[in-house]
Image 1 (cartoon, rainbow, N blue to C red):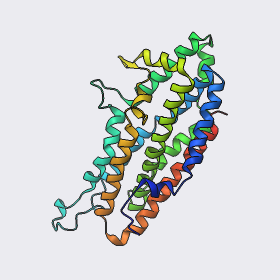
Image 2 (cartoon, rainbow, N blue to C red):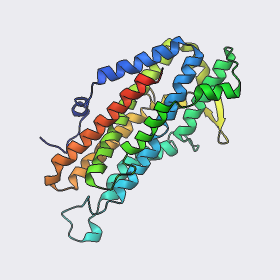
Image 3 (cartoon, rainbow, N blue to C red):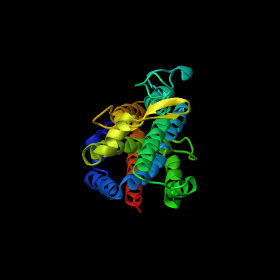
Length: 285
């Protein structure tokens, strides 16, 4: 087996992608059946969970970058000239760069701000439809349940937070990130498609609305638009960069390490798939 070649097909063999998509579809249908309030709760939880991945990949970039003695160009004898860890890390930092300031706009659009604009737009729509909860009632309804707080903490762990900077821990975190990107590309596309086909009035409202967050007006649908495969396909781009970075990690590691590295990467991918399952089974409870 060529451990250093990473394809979507190989990764898809590690998890049931059809069942994962069925969970997303079911969660969307259940949320939508409750109307504007159901969608508001869905997106409150989805933006909470999703909002930790940008910080996770930024941490991963640093974890890889400081591991200078681990990823080395064996064709260069001079020690101060042969480390390639930061070069590898740069392919993961590309995703972090978008998360902290999306390159598709001239403004400082963090993906967290864009997600908050989507959530604020949904709240405005719900109120327009007659939702009249007080701030205290709203906060209680949108409060992160215990299962979500636990899962959010596991995102940091999945990205390697708290683990040593070992090759095993780094490759597992890379696998976790690959899982987040490939499955997120599918789920964002499904969410976008569901809203456009099944929630046309909500979609029209969000596409017209803007929300001020951090002193700037953000389009309320932009977060969904840039991540969906029907729009900007940000997740697909991030997956491609991460795949390149992962393959370079093999290139600059001894061949004798490759089998163990791939096992760790696959384990990290499967860990994310389990977290994905937990989230979409629990989100509408």
